[in-house]
Image (cartoon, rainbow, N blue to C red; front, side, top):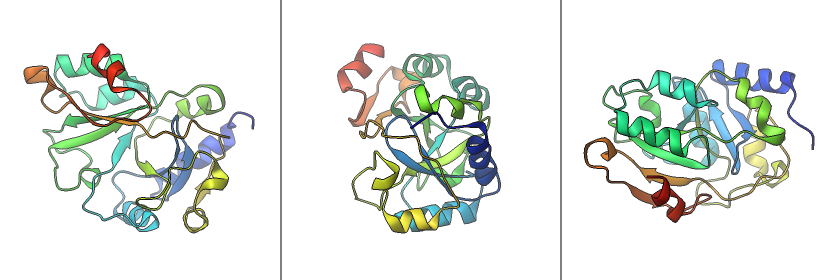
Length: 205
């Protein structure tokens, strides 16, 4: 499988920008993405997964500078942590005092999950995208995380508007780290150990 081409990347960008639902490769597993402000897109994404709408998702940025520019209210210590851990296979739960991206937040609008994937090899062209997406793994809720496009549940594939094939991915989901109070007390919690070991998180923080 070769690198994604500019036409495929533009199709993905346009789909998400219009509130469609796209199936795409991240640095861990295949995911679903839609516009984070699109109620219809988020509803469709959750329905495809069979995921309760009360559960939070994450907002993905395709380059770190864009994330830091939008999340300008983050404190200095938290921003430094982002620079150490991202891009990479982690989801960071951050304080969200301005209530950004409420459709991704579930019952806690004061918390926001943020991803910036490591885009290398076939995935590198995705780095040209300059918008945020609401994303979740492309598996039915509770199912196995797909590492190849052909591993994605056929019902999920049939329900999306755009599909990108990035070849075989590592297959382990991101490590989830709670940094909600990190700026105040330096404390963090690994909520789910995944692609990046907890020991590496601790070493970086």
